[in-house]
Image: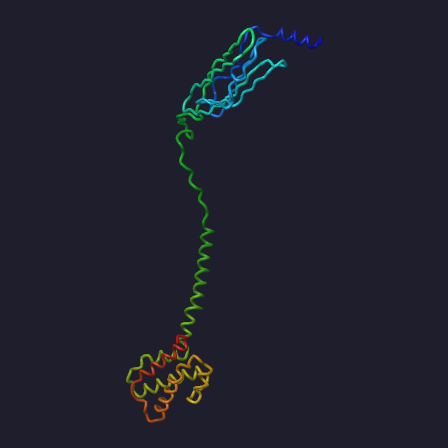
Length: 292
């Protein structure tokens, strides 16, 4: 009881007679966008008055240049408001220095001897641009400098590798051309009927006896080389059985052997148009190449 009485006596002795506010004002200059400005106000509240908390400013309220980020109300042991802290953030980025005002705050109190309002006046602060409107003419601080040129890279290794790869590709292409183009083409020309066709294609339609016999000998030589032995008419069926691709020419080859026998052993009975002989050689060449 004695302690409570002492505390009450201290409170009565310390209670102010008049409702007042003493501002601990922040500096009024040197702010830029994003800075936080804190304003602290010491409150002196007489006994009998109670703060209406609805009159406190609300955090998040925003003007054209300042936004109230935080409101902190501190009370004494007896619940009497002692101080108010208001934290504002600058979100204006002016192109030149501007003066802003922390807004007026009016706190309402109710109680005896009467309801009262405590006014906390506005406070000016200056906000400057992030960068001056006109840069210094000093070298390096003036107009925007051009982009730096990209560094030069040593391309010699890349070019060397590229040349090497191109050479390898060229060699591979040459090899493929040799395997799939040159060799098949040359081998076809070196085949028996291919060589015979190259010799007979210029044979005139009405050759003389020597040209005609040479043509028969050419075709006989191609047949012998293809058969792997000297081929006569009795061996024709065995030749066709071993090389079925020539089956379609069986009758033409039999006719060739008959005409050849007449040419060489029948007193030249095969004289006449030799175009059939050239055509037979061509068809044998096509069969040899797999085209027929």
